[in-house]
Image 1 (tube, one colour):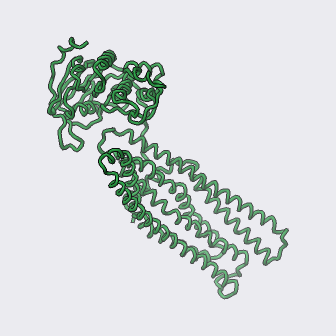
Image 2 (cartoon, helix red, strand yellow):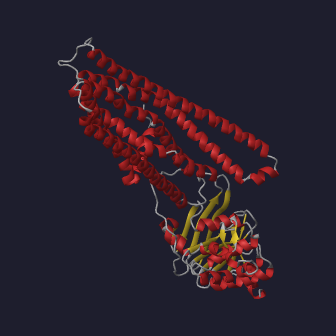
Image 3 (spheres, helix red, strand yellow):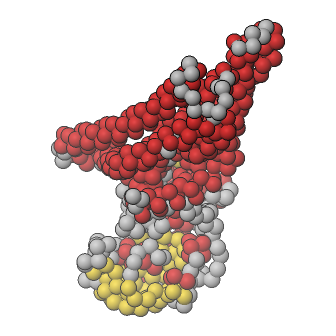
Length: 574
């Protein structure tokens, strides 16, 4: 019985197979060509034996035929090696495509989406589950094509030569796929469970490793270690069940294959001693040897198919697990490119009855907010921590779900393309992402094509040069993931420097001066306001001094946005 999940998994695998290209086609064609050569080889070898034993021909007369047999043997071995290597190359192509497609689709989704998979689960899906499809393309597909065609070809050749042997093949060969299918249903269920267990274990281990410091601080390392050991034991037991079913399917196949070969051997032997007479004419030694040589080869494609049948179950389970865990399909790639900065006039921002809620939609963060920010205006958002300032900034650039209306230049957010939205806006969060790279490379993330001079100018505007100059390698100094090696203020300035490489029409900053002293704050804010001329600027901040230098300020309290008369304080700020 085929389930809808099996059908969707098979369809996805068939669509992905197209990415294997020429190597995969070669891997599937080489065994068929080798099978055709096998018929020639077996017939020639049986002819040599018949002429030598029955005809008594001299060895010298048989040498050309022997040379043909040896040549065919070498060619078939070469075809086998080429087909196997081509299958691996095709599978690697497919795996690379699937990983790129999955990673690209994950990048295309909103970073604040609530249904994003944990990092450990995502890593397990992209690495381990994608690896599980290799056997399907490298071994199962070529074996399936051989099992479908070669027994029919062999039978079509044998049946006219001897109807008894041909009929015996036709009766016994179909029993093998039939019993394999029965065993395969149980194998698919066991493999599905094993794939889920592997995904769970890998994801759990990766996430616990990432939070190792927190676990040790709260004395939970022993409990988590025990939990991972239990999950590993469960995975081991499920893997043994899968192997048990795989061995059972192989045993079933070997049993029926042995029956078929034994039946042919028995028929040929009884016919030679005149105990069984089912033929209209005598059975020659050449034909008898040909039947004996071909008997194992008729079942060999089916045996090979059975030995790789579990690769099919593993691949389908992997595809289902990828789809379930990541919520994306491996056969639906999305094209992404670096978002180039786009120049334009300052953006008009209008919020009407906007309500923001927590990710579970149970509590309100900001309720019925209505505000208008004119093009080129500088606005501050004040409020205590947790009041919703950060969430409001993210909603303005389509990174948070909301109700109500948000218009940029009079257009709803869903009418802005991703390229235009990211090219004309800039958002600096409270915890900016710093990657394991040099300081200069971190700044250049804002515009990968920026020149060294432009990077240095941006670093100077954000006062990154002030602390980078004291480092041994300056802006080329390497920093760790999440800014390891930098203080909070230094990481914030590196992220702020990215702004000066953009040409954003709308700038949204979340606590850009939180880690700066008063003197440095005044310098950075002055450069920031100079840069923001002719652009719309919205800053979420706790700093009353920063808010006083803005054109207008609002205070977010209790989910309500209140206007704050800070404009008259500008003259008190140096």
